[in-house]
Amino acid sequence: MKLIGPFSQIITLNNIPLKGKIVDNQLEIIVNGGLIVENSTIKEVGKFHELLKKYPKTEVEEIETAQVLIPNFIDCHTHICYEGSRANDFSMRNSGLSYLEIAKQGGGIWNTVNDTRNATLEKLTENTLKKIHSHIKNGISTIEIKSGYGLDKTNEIKILQAIDKASKKTKATLIPTCLSAHIKPKDFNGNTKEYLDYCLLEIIPNIKNYSNRIDIFIEETAFGIEESNYYLYEVKKLGFDICVHADQFTTGGSKVAIENGALSADHLEASSEMEIKLFSKTDTVAVALPGASLGLGEKFAPARKLLDSNAILAIASDWNPGSAPQGDLLAQASILACYEKLSNAEVFAALTFRAAKALKLFDRGKIVTTFKPDFHSYLIKNYQEIIYNQGKLKPETVWIDGEKIDFNKLL
Image (tube, rainbow, N blue to C red; front, side, top):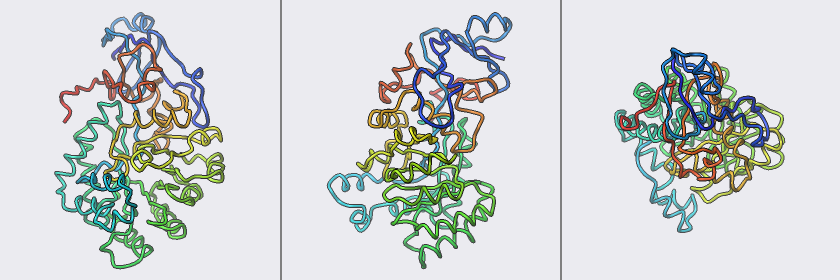
């Protein structure tokens, strides 16, 4: 048993609702707070001096400077297992070339597929760990990671194996997702429906040891509505949880996600009033990906309208080599907050327990009794500084399972 504290403020997120808008005065803030950790669980949270009096013989991890403690962030949508760079794509895009023009010049997702196919399992694992450890230093300790840069049986499994190997070398929780339905690969001899059948027959039956989650990119340049409905129905019959890349450039994907009971529908930059209304009546999490909006110079997901309609809003980084290479989740969320007028409380919820809902996790994202003791602190006295600094403010200390992370031992 260990007592950690005192903290100037502990932002517990206790009693914050899963759905809808939140104002900052709903936040539970424990001043001069502390918490008891026992057996990788939060045993009690309260005033530091009261906990010290109640547990006089416990080990104390004393915090000697003014710090604010909040739950660790959860990045519920990333593509960080890949090889290569798309800096040339970014340059061409900013010079005015379209996605199609870039693809014709050898850029686009297929460039990443080729680089990833050529990478060894060991290299993919090593590069993924570097990004994981970067996230940990930024207070992110639960990370969803998609495949989708292999696009054939051998290489999709290789990516999932790399994620599995990385999970054994980090204290972070990794949630692998199979996105073999990312695009139809250029070297596949058949149409998109036939490629989805290939995924169902050749890839999906061989990934159960690595992932229980399936994703699909529903878009005019990827997979259509009818074939996506077919694919999601089939993978659900096999017992997989599903999520969907939806409404990034055109609408239709979020409706498919909701009607098929997806855990989340992610992107939503193109979502209209009709889609927002659908989210108001479902427990499918609406995941905004501001990193992709920044990387592509596109509009943001309608986060304010989604919250006002009583949707469950999460925010994730979409860290990937093409559209969202930055990877700084807090900076992205803070910028989204400025444009969409999100409260501090709404951002914190979207980065923690609401994001956990998108991953079907219900034991983290709050600093409350029985939850996983994953949290981080900043050298500040007032929690408002976190979003105000727009990602410039970095954690002083990160704890996973109640244990302080030594940044010097991270890659």
